[in-house]
Image 1 (cartoon, rainbow, N blue to C red):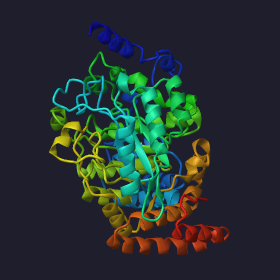
Image 2: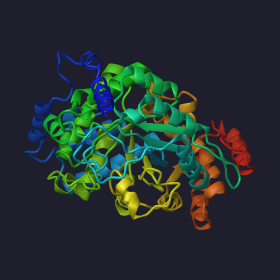
Image 3: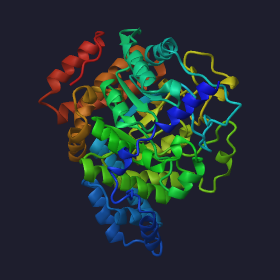
Image 4: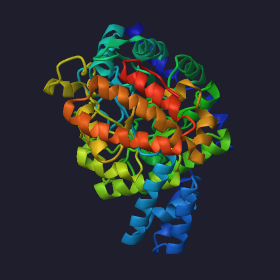
Amino acid sequence: MTMELNKFDSWIKDRIKNEEIVKYQDKGKDFIPEQEIISKLELNSKKEPDPLRIKDILLKSLAIQTLTPDETAVLLNVRDSNMLEEMRQAALAVKKKVYDNRIVTFAPLYLNNLCVNNCMYCGFRKDNKTIKRKILSLEEVKKEVEVLAGKIGHKRLIVVYGEAPDTDIEYIRKTIETIYGVKVKTKNGWGQIRRVNVNAPALSIKELKILQEAGIGTYQVFQETYHHGTYDKVHPKGTIKNNYQWRLYCMHRAFEAGIDDVGIGVLFGLYDWKFEVMSLLYHTRELEQRFNIGPHTISFPRLEPAFDSPFTQNSKYKVSDEDFKRLITVIRLAIPYAGMIITARENAQIKKEAIPLGCTQTDASTRIGIGAYSERYDEQEKKRQQFLLGDTRNLDEVIGELSQMGFITSFCTAGYRCGRTGKYIMELLRSGKEGKFCKLNAVLTFREWIDDFAAEETKTAAENIINKEIEEIKKVSPDIFSTFIDYYERIKQGERDLYL
């Protein structure tokens, strides 16, 4: 037992490579200037912003240019209802310009709930003795994917790992390989996961190179809170995650390791939401300035009740529904090219209200218990969950609603497999070309899903939206329309995974 404990302690001690922090810092300082952020917010809170300045800022967003901290602070302090409505309309226009009317769907797949950290807001924290711990074997991973790809119809996953010796980089690599290797017969074709995004701990450059070689999509790590004092409070000392700087610079290491598609985020409710939005912008601008590539996605989960985690019930910084919709609007305007992910933490009504404000991705048929897709899902499963879900609807239901709202659900992963990532994707997003280009593949993949998985009621609404999209493609992309229609008809005949 002593030998095992020493090995465990040694593993924790060796996780953080200090040289992979200081190399990116400016004279030992990080890029989150707390007092500067607070001052900008306070300065702009003293009076209602000038409407003419708001209009100028919105024009900059519509030109798909990242806003400055001062401009973002102005938007965060708008109170006038007419100007707020202008912001919401501009946010939707930005989203349509960059991503068209597509919504990408995915599913989270939690592979274990083992963790050496002790985050106060998390059901997986080390000191939670009541949670039922589990790590999926490769065979169990395969069974989960067979349900996700073969019965539900997902094409992309976000795989989630706790930080523990048994789920090190080799476990991550093997599980990703296993996921990509699963192929399941469906009604008219084959179900397969085509893109695996990863939500993992902050890793070293050496580990990140292994992750890149495994063929991952987006590497996603949330700072949780950018406020130094709050971060230290909610991540107890003596844990890996207590090191603010190690986590803050993980995206720098990812770019150096060759991963050029990254996602950042905040757990809203740990500290003041306006400060966190400003910090997301500072993080974005730091990546843009150093690597000329910003975050491909930004996530904004809210603090939710977690099993046997009293802290989640008592935070004074909980974000109201109205403030939540405001922060989504401002993030869309401040970082106009970024994909924005709203998750099943939120209930169906809030998601319906928030998606038109600029969201581009959402999960569906979500289960976050370990092994919950292939096993019976009951009250006991809560003991293997990280937090409680707000939206438990299946993918078919979500797609039906999105179709009625006028959005096409996209399962496209072509860009990532064709190398349209990093600087290339940034140029396409900023120019507005990405949305039109991906509309083609959205329709092709949606056709696949309709034929393989849609219930009859959903199929009616889905057919209406897909026919509308085809007519639009015929008008805006006449040069490639014949090739597109050829692919579309071949998919209707049973071919799969055709993309442009």
